[in-house]
Length: 334
Image 1 (cartoon, rainbow, N blue to C red):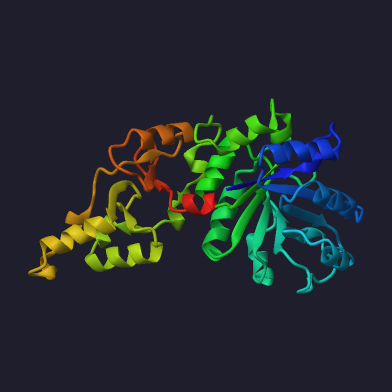
Image 2 (image 1 turned 90 degrees about the vertical axis):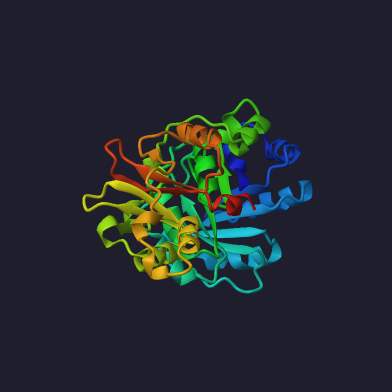
């Protein structure tokens, strides 16, 4: 996952000193916020004279058309317009280079991206835009998941409240870029903050329930409806390589993976009709509590005797609550 450094979050040092510091520590992108101020392009020109780091420009304006010529004359690698402030149709000319994105605040549904599906990415504002140092709103975990499911070929950028723990969670969810401002510049050094944002060892304030795929979005088959057909359909629909199994009350009875199905078929090659789907159930899979912290989840994975790509999530009293998967982790690292 790329780290986009919000250059204006440093309120003390001059721009040239900030850029030199970020350049020295090899930050991935330079995030430039523009609150309807055309003079931001003076800074962009200055940045271009100092380094060749990619510029990640976020424009908040009701009238984006007045920026088009400036963007043509001063191309940036990423340009994002804030959805809620638009008072005219956003028609970015093809002559404006770089990747295009639309930014939304927490209350705005990601479904608005349908109007901009020719864009390259969405920027999810996880705190109040313009307020540095805010806490990441956990509802944005579900927005990230919803967008990833609806637009798997598009990128997700996140701005606001990104600390080391949030960084780990959203990397795992497939986020491709995270904006960091106050955390980056309030640390002992930019280098120390960058290392914390990308390392695997973190502290926990969030629980698994904050970012898991909930049960209503998970592949599930009830025990009393278990057949080979229902299992295969659930695995196929879920596209995760397994399905959860629950009883009528919703208590977890285990799971069935692609490997379980494969073994069952191999054991019944002479007569598939003799295959009893109940025999496919792994009734004691590695699972995690919905109240577990991120640290506890990582410890569980670390001490497992085999690679873990997904974890069923259960409550303390055994009810199935959802799943945590790690299939998007590689996407978030590219």
